[in-house]
Length: 376
Image (cartoon, rainbow, N blue to C red):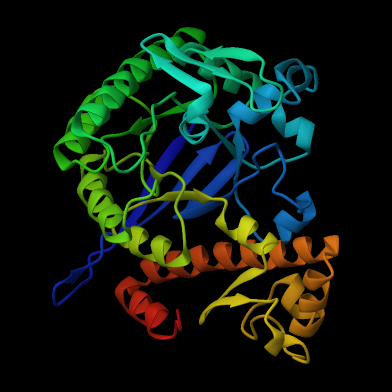
């Protein structure tokens, strides 16, 4: 069972700026996670183009799998036969699985929401399926993830207050049912609740109150980074995070850019996931200490330098910008692997730097330096 230890809370105040950053550990059956932490997304049991050894090199502490996609293929019967997702993909560290709620949001034309759950058509072959909150938990128990997410209704931006309230009510109903099922089964996996409420502060408050009345081991904030302006996302996060229990992990789902992570760690968030480092790598965009780099630009054709001279990743230690540009322009498969190694390494190192800054009680100094050297 999951155990969260809050090791340090930042007490820095500089003028009107205050840090609420937290340092902690999450202990699971597959290892200890140092927080704040970024979780690379391995939708189908694979962080695209990366091997287990690549993830180890990048110091990935935990990865995320997708319940919706893994349910459709390879299917629960395969993963159960292979004794769980950890064994199936040869990953011996912690793993989190989401409930499918975001996929039902992004594939909304194929899904119908009812009190009982979500009926949907497979985006692969059109076959019909149904997820109840109990089934979402049951599937994740078969997957064997260390952290499971309760089924929620993620709603986009903009949405009316009535639409958001409907989604909130279903999310609360499903959270209670999923929690009761999890308790009944005596699962060793840990189940997190998901706060919804759209871009309405009073609904975020209501959702947080309803969900924290249920004794989940941890809580996530869902429904951010769904099309809203960046400042509105920060406003909702800053409002909601203090409403969550101090002694349990706080997770903001699906966020985001390096700048997002620094801002949200300063607000007191512990866990993040996002496809951005791996997806952007496949599109030729690389993250560096001074901003983003589009490796396909002509100016890198004769550039002998690594992506980032301050980076110790495998890619930066062995390959030039010129070569990486050539691989990408030629659509060589190696481009995707090398670019992704760099981006995931950058993200995990960024989190490590923030953990060190919190430990040394200089997070606000770190944040100021981080933004001062970025070109975009």
